[in-house]
Amino acid sequence: MSSNKSSSTLRRILLVRTDRLGDVILTLPMLPALRHCFPDAHIAMLLRRYTGEVVEGNPFVDELLWYDRDHTRIPFVEMVRVLRERAFDAAIVVYPRFRLAWLMFLAGIPIRIGTGYRWYSVLFNRKTFEHRKDAKRHEVEYNLNLLNELQCGLTENFAPQFDIQIPSAAEASAQAILRQKGIVDSAFAVLHPGSGGSAREWSPENFGTLALRLMDEAGMKVLVTGAAGEEEKVSRVVQASEGRAIPTVGELSIKEFGAVLRSAKLYVSNSTGPLHLAVAMGTPVLGLYPQHVAMSARRWGPYTKNAAVLVPQRPLDCNVCVETQSPCECMATISVDHVFQSAMSVVNKIKQENVGHAN
Image 1 (cartoon, one colour):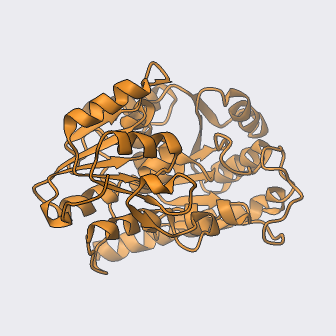
Image 2 (cartoon, one colour; image 1 turned 30 degrees about the vertical axis):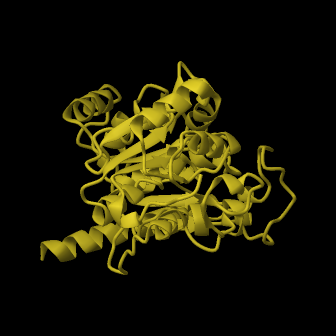
């Protein structure tokens, strides 16, 4: 199946990203870019249901298609039928997997964009040749570069935007939860100790000590957040904070979490999806990253100027810690004092900018 369509005639475009929350958030800037290049096209996105909430309401996408049902992938034949019925002109497979490439091929989509470096890349007929594991640029930039295969020439002035919409109901629910936890009209920080297994982690005990510093020296309340399954990590943070930090685990939807983050003065975490949600909400961010190239902040860091990043003082790609091992000896070299001082620098920078704008 070869491509015989000109990019200028595209009317139906499918963007495919079926992995995790942070990955989907870092793909969102492709939507306004596609709309800019193809203002009259029907733009759809194929993704998993649990990440779909972050895209719902996005003004640049016309349709969301689901890759799973009841936490199970939709059967292959059914998925092919769904894609065929929609007669897409082009598909951009941001998250390359054989099943996805095979789906796009069998669905008869004329333009199929994907990596040129996998054994199944023959199923794509417009290929990109960038090794993302080398982390030479940010994930947002890798994603936007895929649009070059559609002759979608973005100018240097194009500013990536995330466009995560928080409905009023989610905002009201988030504020109600904050009130229940005693965070009313208070400056507060959000600490998120988990990473969902996607990165090496700073210890919960360090997060707890940081919480004490933020409460005692910065006058902030501290909310400790976690996804379902991260109860133990959150509990350890609260315990290390002498029981003063406020926990919330698995009770916030993605949009409610976004509303909470938008109200926060600071967000601190390891490399994880909620960090990118905080960036999209305009919250000052401090990210803690390993010195491992494939996990580096150069590729996965906060895509904003309102952020700081700290990494261990260890050799590049240090192999002392296994990625799944906890605690991580390398990450432990990042001191609580360094994190606190860096966090305060980010917060104070925002304060000074706000004062400058007011004047």
